[in-house]
Amino acid sequence: MNATVAVAVEAAAVSRQAPLSARALRAAAVSWFVVTALGQLTFAGYVAGFYGRTALAGRPELWNKVMPHGYVAGETFFNLVLGVHLAFAFVITVGGLMQLVPAIRRRLPALHRATGRVYLLAAALMAAGGLVMVWGRGAVGDLSQHVAISINAGLILSCATVAWRHARARRIDLHRRWALRLFLAVSGVWFFRVGLMLWIVVNQGPAGFDPKTFSGPFLTVLAFAAYAVLPLAVLEGYLRAQRSRVAWVPYAMASGIALLTLAMAMGVAAAAAILWLPRL
Image (tube, rainbow, N blue to C red; front, side, top):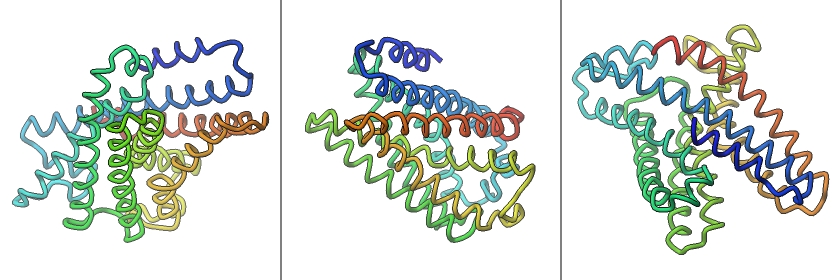
């Protein structure tokens, strides 16, 4: 919560001499981050509270209540990969949010660099673990979803590599851009869940997919949108709007981000009420 408050305070301190369009764009971006931070921290609490608690209690078979074939007795290697994957999901969620807080970057640069290294390593290992689970053991969903997850893993590894190289070369502006891309790629699983719950609530039940096989046209579209296309496309639009000299462009981008933030807030509320909080 402190990180979220810090971001909001910094937004309020934006120079009054900045163009109104720039302030509107920044306000929309900060609102998006606040909703994202609250949603991802809730998700991190769920990962620790459900998966971590049951693992420490020696009952990982309870994972199968929410993750079909998550834990399989006798498959030590894949069970270990899954456990590490879940642990890194918690670390990477909290660490990723910390990386985006300007106050930490400016006032605690050593902490920013240290958590950044851990974040990059965790992202790479989580992506590799995801590939092992999808193609080695199998996962819910059809081939299209597995392909989308694999593309997401490739994006994570690519963005992590480029962000690290720019940081090493002290190209800070480029490093931050690629770190933002990495954050969004890593958040693909979270975006998928939030989008799915928003869709179910709006339609008052499953629509466009079979809940038993967890496959269908909607899930195919959602998988590619959440894992690879929509978040990165919005980010590119935001970065271009920041540099645009056309007055209406930042306003248009701010309006688009505001609408997406509202939809995301509804999805977060639905996911928290239906998926996460009841299992804590």
